[in-house]
Length: 479
Image (cartoon, rainbow, N blue to C red):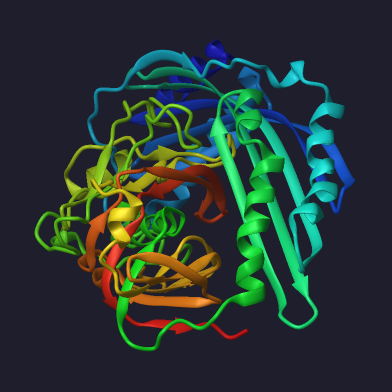
C-alpha cells in the first residue's frame, strides 16, 4: 500500500544527501469492548495509519513520521529527518551506520478462519457479560468482588521499502483478552488474578480460549488459596516453578538484558540497563546446561509473529542463552553495526510514529523431557508455584522477586495443601544455575512488552516448561 509514495520518500531522501533511507507505511485498525461486573463500559473502533521515515545522514541516524500520505507529506517528513540529523551532528560521538544485510522482498499475511467483521458485536459482548453471572456459581465460600474484562481485535498492515532493496508487505490480525478477577472473604481478605491472552489469527483464536470455562477454572483454583492457604516452609526446599512464572522470568532476565541497545547503554535513561557487558558475550556463563533461552518471531499463531522485521531482515530463532552461555543478543541493524556483527531481525516499531527498536518477539526457556509427575515424584518437601500475583526486577535485570498466586505444598511426591503468597527471590545467575529438571510441555503466555522513550508497547509471547529448582528459600509476602 502507498508504494509509490514510499519509493518517492526513499528517492527524495537520497537526493538530499542521505546514505540510507527507509519508509514504512503502518496501519492498525480494530475494535475494543470493555466490560466491568457484567455491564458494558464502552465499545468502539480504532484506526491509525501513517508513514515513518528513517535516514542515515552525515553520520547521524534520524526518524520522522507523518499522517499525510501524499508525496508532499512524506517530503516534509524526510526534510524534518534531515534537519534533525544536521542539528544533532555536533552531538554524535561516533558515525552511525547500519549493518550490511541481505534484506527481503516478500509479501505475507496471517490467514484467518473466521474474520472479525463476520461476528456480530452483540455476540462478542454476550461472551464477556455472561462471565459475571456464571463465575459465582463455581465459588463455595468466597465472593466475586469484581471482574474487569477487555476484548481487543486489531489488524496490523505494513509496507516497508528501503534504499538498500527491502520491500516487505505484511498483514497480521491479532486478538487479545484481559481480565482481572477479585475474590473476597470476610475473614481471609482478598485475592486477585490478572489474565492476559493473545495470539495472531481471526476470531477463531478467541473462541479457542473458551473464556467462560477458562475463568471458571481459575476461580476454582484460586479460591482454596484464599480460604486455606498456609505459609511455606522456612528452610531451603526444592521449588517447582510453573510455566507461566518461567515465561515471565525469561522475558525479564534473559530477553531484556540481552537487548543489544540496552547492553550498549542506549536504554539507560529510558527502560534501564543490563548486567551484560559486551565482553561477556560468548565467553561467560549465566547458568547450567539446562539454561537455553530462545526468542523466535516465526512461531505460527504467536502474538510476536513476523517473518521479516521492520528493517526488512528475515526473521529466525535467536538463542539468547545457550546451555548456560551468554550467547546471542537481540540486534537491529544499528546495534549490529556497533557490535561488528549481523542483525538477527529484532527491529520492531509499535506504529508508524515509532522508530524500530531492538525488541523481543516470543521468548521461552527450551523444554526438557519430564512429565509434571516426574518433576515432583522424588520431592519430599517442596513448593509448586503455578502462577504469579506480583513481581519486580532491578534496573540491570539481576535481582528479582516473584510472589506466587496459585501455589501448593509438595509432600512426598504429591501436591498437597495450597500455599498463600510464597515469595521467590533470586538473582538471574542463581535461577539459571539452579534448574535441575524441565518439563516437556512448552506453554506460552501473552504480554505487552514496554520499552523506549516515547514508550512503545509491542505484543509478545513469553513461555517455557515447568521447571524444578534445587534447594531455595521461599519467603512470604505481606498479606
